[in-house]
Length: 322
Image 1 (tube, helix red, strand yellow):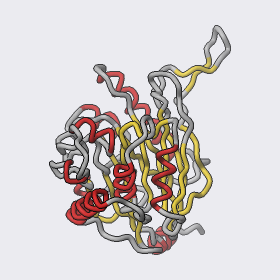
Image 2 (cartoon, helix red, strand yellow):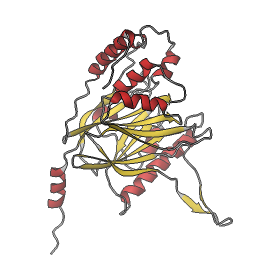
Image 3 (cartoon, helix red, strand yellow):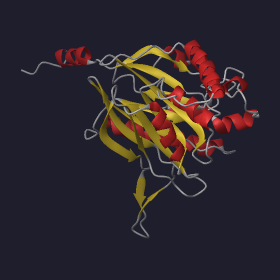
Image 4 (cartoon, one colour):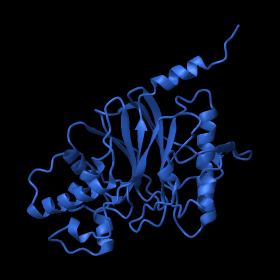
């Protein structure tokens, strides 16, 4: 992490953040054994230039993980470049294009990863909604669409190959429309894991789903086809908003395909009820703070990446052909 040439105020803010990170008790990952995966909506990241202090704080938060799926990255990538420079030479980014219309909000998705711990294996694509042929025009058309198509990335860490699908589900006053997007995501993943041509059955679905609670019908919509939170703590209503009451963000997977998740997971509460100590020397309102860092907390889980024993067991347990 390159925190050189910072002011005393920025150093004080970073020290405070490091104390809050320690409270989160995120276990260190180990090369060839484990991987820390996170999803984080960084509010309108790139729309307006962030302060130097904010860029260093964001980099410090990202640096706690090995692979981070980012939502709300905007069309302007300059602040992302500033963050990458602080993270250091081993860090890489894969990101999507942006949509110009209000539904797309000029947003991108991105995967940031430390190549010492995880490797990008080549698949980077948007998920397309299902289409049907219009009998009148002959064109293949989508009956409903995601406002922002989920973004797919394939990765490998140790002996674990896996695919991450990141989504940012629409917001607004129409929960029925949001439910349709979530149901379409569940259907899309279900079709992929059942498709013989799909590259890898280990699919991890993450992102900002704009779900207020795990008891909400919206959560039931996205989990209707078998997706589940992988660890016990992520199956509780631990909030990812700053007040920790709304479960907007999710990490989900199909439990029948992998035993690669540890019991470690949770949120990184960089806010801790007080934002002023992170920005000594600056006067910010809470709303201004959310545009400097974010209004979402990162949600994370630790993966066990040495799955060779599990693979051998699967081979041993295959039916014997005579």
